[in-house]
Amino acid sequence: MKIVAGLGNPGSKYARTRHNVGFRAVEALSDRLGVKLDRSKHDALMAETTCGGERVMLLLPQTYMNKSGVSLAKAMRNANTTGADLLVVCDDVNLPLGKLRLRGQGSAGGQNGLRSIIVHIGTDEFARLRIGIGDREGGELTDHVLGTFHPDEIPLIDQAIERAADAALAFLERGLEAAMNEHNGWAPA
Image (cartoon, rainbow, N blue to C red; front, side):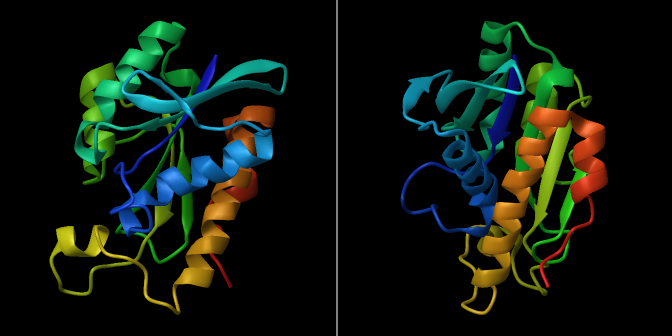
């Protein structure tokens, strides 16, 4: 079974924040796959389906960003899967607004959700798709990631979220390498 997890914070208060682009990308993916993220299990909202002839679990951890690994570890144990079958979609303040970066492994790079996942599943060998949310321009990091996008940024981030859903679908249908070749480095016009 493959797992695609979007990182973010639960609740309407956080729905349109920069930190929740991972949630939004997996929600867009669920629309494409024709499933609803409405089951509560593994401290997450989830859906199960098939794609590319393989079972797939879509997951939105409800443990808040900094404890995302708690939910992911439960789901992975239950599905009896490894990091090789996991794709995590999250925000990245170190990337320009809307730019995508897809990698097969690596450090948390300062992203607390990724840090939690690495700690709880015991490896950094899992795919991660980062969506650039832009630099905080000298302000507080927390205020930036928990803030909403400026009106002129919304069309760009909406494009990036749709493209991230395309990348996640490519990961499911054709594998990590194909997804990287097609989507790595993409940025909105």
